[in-house]
Image (cartoon, rainbow, N blue to C red; front, top):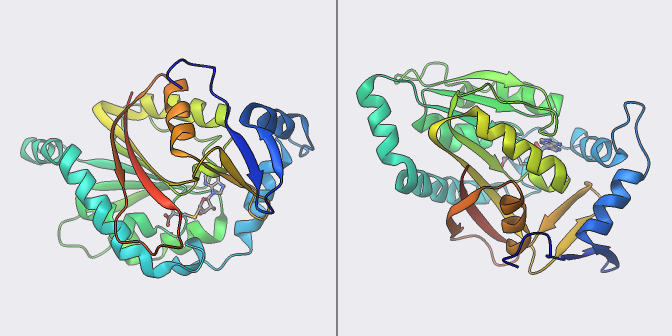
Amino acid sequence: MSARGVAHFRGVDDLGRDVGTHEEFWLKVKRGAKNADGKPLWYAKGIEYWDAIDADVDGVLGGFGHVSAADARDNARVLRDVYGATLEARRASGEKATALDCGAGVGRVTSSFLIEHFDEVDLVEPVGHFLEAARVDEAVTGAGRRDGHRAVGFFKEPLEEFTPEIGRYDVIWIQWCIGHLTDDDLVAFFLRCKEGLKPGGIIVMKENNAKDGFILDLEDSSITRSHEYLLHVIDKAGMRCVEHRVQTGFPKELFTVSMYVIQP
Ligand code: SAH
């Protein structure tokens, strides 16, 4: 899979039926039913699914709210190891450290982790009642924190339409949401993220790994990509994965979860 463009990843749906290679699958999505705005119905179906889910941690984690602490712990470790020195330098120079929480849901990643490390955090999330829950949760907004860390931006948009402000972010954190994006939209989003980073800034993507190929979830209109497939998409965006780690301490019945530190 080293050479670009020759990779083929086969998919199965949640009933075990073959859905073709990733190219065939995304072509079908693109050529399939569309909304009035011309967007593949694929996206509307994803939003429709989340619209019906409770706006709390158990809701966004599909009933696995109890893994949130282990998740936050490993997030903090990888951030410290790959970006801790830069964050210290920011602090020393009086410059604000900023992060973007992508597909933020109810702001769980922000409240459990990002707000501890960044002066300013922005959240982008397309589902209205999730974003509203985040906006009024002091653990997310940081209201009352002594260190002055705050969530400042709340953007109600899907990632395939969102453009980060140029040069604003140290870290763009993308966790458990890119399964909703087509490969092309994900690559395009990575490229916009690149513009949104400060010099030396990083993207961290944290995702479930299918064992191979991909698994289509018909219920929430998303796919779970394999490790090789995710690396392929990073490569397609012309970026490098400089660090890969596997989440520790999760229940065995869950997918393997990987963290990818990506540098443009
Ligand atoms: N990252 C959060 C939420 C995970 S749940 C966390 O780890 O707690 C998946 C999230 O992806 C939901 O909030 C859902 O609304 C969001 N989502 C669905 N489609 C999306 C899209 N096209 N762009 C961005 N986020 C999307």
